[in-house]
Image (cartoon, rainbow, N blue to C red):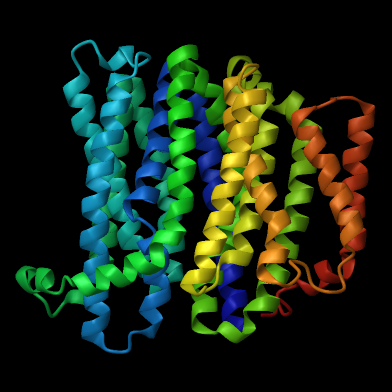
Length: 474
């Protein structure tokens, strides 16, 4: 199991780095050539797709990954898979329709209200539903342990999502953007289904539908609803807030949000690389989960600290140089927050990628919901009057921070291995959080960030050495 985890983790991380590098280069090109309005629509559509994908499955993706390894009978596995596909697809279609109508009716959507609303909604449904459907099918490949196929898909999808919508935007404006996204998701679905057909090679379409099981739906929802409650509450807070921001400040303001999202991907790849592996491996071998999660948490913390520090040391100079003065100015106030938020979100998810009893999952979900409500209250009442986008970004930072602080009590064990010095780690993290909301951009901040990098490396030197290819242990 150790060598399998090592190979998969390195493949995942390498693929994520390569994917994000492609995405980063194409995103720079997109922002440089497209207008702020088109960038705003692209950002809004990508955000909407993520929401539909998250809500459309109602937590059944988590439940499916947990339940599938316990199914030994081929027909039982097929029945669970068909039920998961049919249920999630129908819910995704409903949510996609609701989201598209909200976008089309928003006062800021002037570019699609001059005779193109119908076409926009049609293409929007195809994109949002198609993107969610592809994620449903790819999650099945992931649950089956086909990591290589999933990782390779991430590479070409990153290339397609950056290139095809850009060509569409330069040719047809806003409609071209969503048309390009539609083409991308159609290709993605075709590839996913072509790899998927061998699972049901012995079934005709009618037999496929006969495998649908109400009993399996109940099992999926029973396990998945507590997991689903967190993205539900999160999106019920963030989506209306985003709609209100573009309504009052204009959709072109989202160009800065897009730049900040791209910057956040620099650190987001760390947790993203490990999360699917941890969930699948923990489901297969529950006994080795504790040490695996502790070492993964420590590795991600160190990498996140180093990446954030280097980012903060250079953002004021590099962002205008890379993205242009306009988008960079809009992003500077929120990019650090979103970079730190991406790190914390990844860290908060790592200890939770394991099978939980339904009662424990419910308690954990209530903790996450409570953190979202607290962070929303702080962000909307205190920060929002000054800046709507800073408020939007802050929710994503404060909520996982609360969760990370609560997890040791909830899980009844440490997040770090026993030999890790905790107090210096907390001090480093506190200083970096301060630089998110109050960037000084002076010699004091520069020296502080360099000290943080050096301290993190020195304190974790033995652990860093142990992460060489032969020694990542479960």
